[in-house]
Length: 216
Ligand code: URA
Image 1 (cartoon, helix red, strand yellow):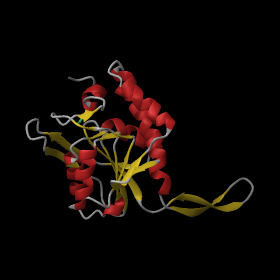
Image 2 (cartoon, rainbow, N blue to C red):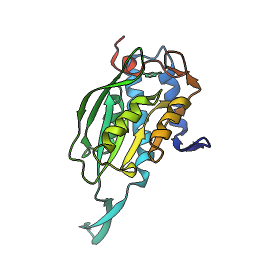
Image 3 (cartoon, rainbow, N blue to C red):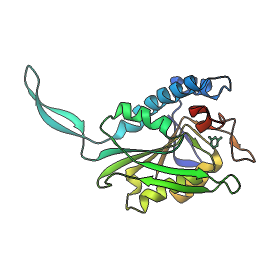
């Protein structure tokens, strides 16, 4: 895991397997099917790191040999919240890791002219005492990510209950995000160079939603 001195709450998961798979995702020749599989695989690897600090408690169980106090994940249940639509490509992987997690959805599209997020759907489970993993592969301008966290915070979810997970981020977007939500941790596989004039991440991987779902 790497950090960038400009962004104290950004964590770059530079594990060789993640980097290798991301390179194949960036390649324009990679098929929809492979792109989808790679995103799922990277999410599993990232999810392993992101869930590293989940609090544990113990339960008493009987093995065939004796009774022991054995660790299980404590109280706060997880909620996976994909930011639609590309976030779905990551939530599937997270649910493989934590099959009992609840799932919320936040639907935001980017206005093509203003690049501002427009919300069209919010569906969340009961919010009490939960930890939320928001996921969206591309953290570009940061506006959708800021909006998604706003949605949770308006419902009294605390910064320490929210984790934001992206595949690729632009420094411009991370700056916007960390100004708005300095105490929310962001995990990415790569911090890329910059945004272009169309607010695409460079070098990036193109439109994650289109590549994931085979649309254009
Ligand atoms: N959304 C994407 O899918 N790709 C980008 O590069 C930026 C935003």
